[in-house]
Figure 1 (tube, rainbow, N blue to C red):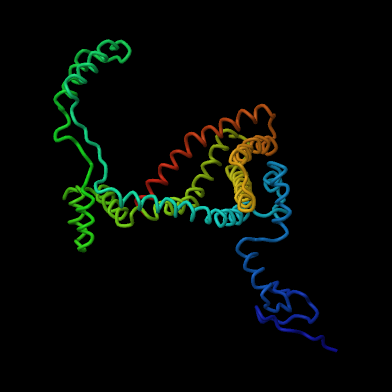
Figure 2: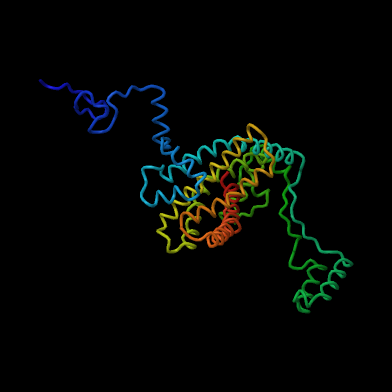
Length: 352
């Protein structure tokens, strides 16, 4: 008596009836496409939102460094992959944060538009010579404090010449331009080179100078609108760069404590924790307004999380872990983040 077989809808191969899954490709034998199946598969495939997410959540939040340690030790099916976890929680965070961004962007756009409407000339830097009396008083003060400033008599004489005569500053250097004239050129649909020339751009301007004036013109046309949105749009890209840099810092301070990939795993889980923490703060504030000092206190507590996470992951003493976490935070917050912020602001202006 032959056994009944069915054909897999995915790979078209035959298998015995009664199997829950196809032994050839793994698809469910009876996989009816319902709304639940459709959206679950979408979330599961792109964000791996399954039981491993829940199993990873509580240890990640309340046992600093534990999940990263377990994943590196070989338990990689029990917990959600660090990169997938980071991707999912970052999407949730930026979704919640987008509502705040809209509010900030709207307020800034209104303020910029009001400023553009009320000003006829963009303020510039007008370096005019000092009057003789003020220059004399300043010169005497400098001479009295030459020992402190380290300036020679020749340096003081040159400074006197600049203050009184305006030497080394011919024509009173200024970066101002007539906004009304530019607006009138925009209104008559003048060609861009003509408008840029009216703004002060020279014919032999280089690529970056030309790009600066083009963006400045765009900034004026839009009354500054969209610049904040452009800045916030650059944050996800910046974070993908900042995260590996954080892993590099870990590698420097824990040179003999594993491969770079191990430090990267720790970084993914730590940044995931930060995203979850920030998402909870934003989510709660949507429901109940929390005082700012409590928000900042919660954010600052992430340092203690980092301290304990480093202690548990790298298995070093509490005091040594405290010292290293302090140095890592110092270098990251005071050196790397300001540099990244400068790059983000510049990129936002040049590409918005």
